[in-house]
Length: 75
Image 1: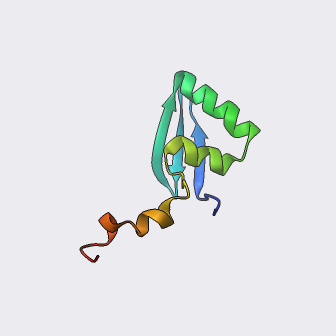
Image 2: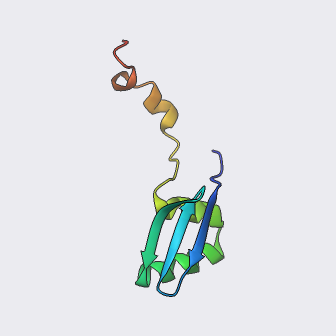
């Protein structure tokens, strides 16, 4: 599975802003921001940010592409 890339975060006075390729992907405040900061320090930062923003590949994209619903009228 390819590793996520292009994420960065900025810690502000009362929040944490996560960006992906320069666009805001998530803003975390309060306890969620503290939990995120603790997790990003202890793990792979890119992977943690991908999970927290929901931009995480689950590995089922190949199977979904072959599903009849996604064939665009071809069967």
